[in-house]
Amino acid sequence: MHIADGVLPLASIAAGWVGTGVVAGLTLRKAPFEALPKAAVMTSGFFVASLVHVPLGPTSIHLTLNGLVGIVLGPLAFPAILVGLILQSLLFQHGGLLTIGANTLMLGLPALAAYKIYALVSRRNFSHREAVAGFLAGSLAIFFSGLLLALWLMTAGREFLTIARLALASCLPLMVVEGLVCAAAAAFLAKVKPEILWRKTHAVDESVLP
Amino acid sequence: MRLTRAFYLSLWALLISGLLTSGAMAHKLLVAAVVEGKNDLKVQAFFPDGSPAQEIPVTVAPADGSPPLNAQTDTQGNCRFSGLKPGAYRVEAGDPLGHRGETKIVVQGAAAAAPPAPAGTAPAAGSAASSDAPAGEAIPWINILAGLGFIFGLAAFVMVLRLKADLRRYASRD
Image 1 (cartoon, rainbow over the protein chains, first blue to last red):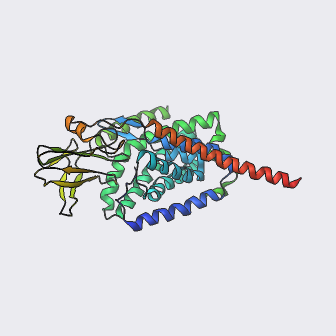
Image 2 (image 1 turned 30 degrees about the horizontal axis):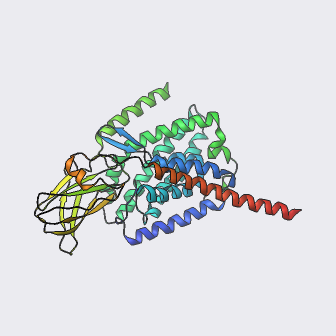
């Protein structure tokens, strides 16, 4: 799920960089210094996860983990994903250099949404709420990324509905896999070390969200 | 009990969706081109794990500015162009989801030669000719280590800067 160079028009590339700059600035403005080591670990996970191929029937899918980055790093997920994508582009040739802005918005905004979804659902009172919240956060992050991918490609003159249908069909297995990964991680972390999850650490101070 | 049921439902959904979807969920697209015979060109488009990029458009553009030739890959990710004139060509393939790969090749007429593809992006043209199924990319261990080193180095750098500022602040209080 990386848009390559030469696919998007110049205006979309510029819009991607401007949007990424604005959102990265907003999310970094009140970033707590204490979260930096955690951000480094999650950025590393995001950076390497793209190399993990999961064979699935006649195809194979690739982990993205933007949902998990979102529920652990909260608003810091966006700059973490930006750094991860820059390194993926430079070192693995995943996506293009010019499209880093568009790719960051495509994966970073759903990560912020995943954090919000996780915070909303896990606040409710029912059994296994952490796992359910993690599953929803992980799978919906991929869903939103697919929609944003279709939106970006629409700016390149492609038909939105066709691309969206194709993107979401391709995303479907990944949504399930990432949902399960996020559910397992969220349930485990909430049990053994809840302070790793952003909501538990910053339960009172929600003002850091953009 | 409900969670167990949800888990099994997820597994079924995973299985069914895996059977229904094509291998388009990739991070990049690789293209290998090789001259076969005198002036026929075989192009292979595939994803980094070696799975073929099926039924995607391929364009072969001559370097002299002549109109490009278009074709579509088959289910094995292959397509052929026949009767090319001697000269340099840019071979480009792109799937509908924004992945794009390209390579360059020289058709020399009687004797065929192709420049080797950049390391880590596509197999060498010769190897593509001898094997129908392209091999997947090797794990780039050096690049992984470089990336991890950069991330933790950056974090350490910011932490040292912050620590330095804190120490200066404490010192100025005294």
